Image 1 (tube, helix red, strand yellow):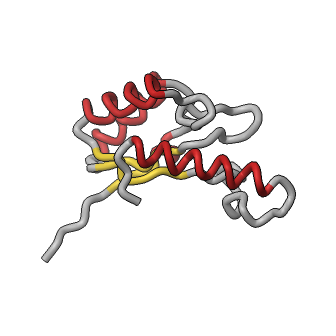
Image 2 (image 1 turned 60 degrees about the vertical axis):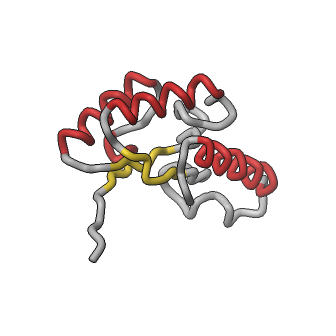
Length: 119
């Protein structure tokens, strides 16, 4: 019989706009007792950037994030790239600007793969 691991959607602890924000969120996640975190991977909106947005998060940024997550002995359970922000249907339901959102989704998938996400 397999056991389930518990993960936390990191954005439930606030926006991840910097490594300092992420460190605070990971500290809380560890205190809560989860074994993994799902990271938000695109800007929240035009006025709120995300540390992991693939248009800015270069190899150095990805390495720093991975090392920080690992320093808390947490796993990355997945990534969220909801292009309509924290509300809406994900951003692929509106034909206007769809091509650019599909390209951003592809970048987010590459980021997730680089960071060890198996899905």
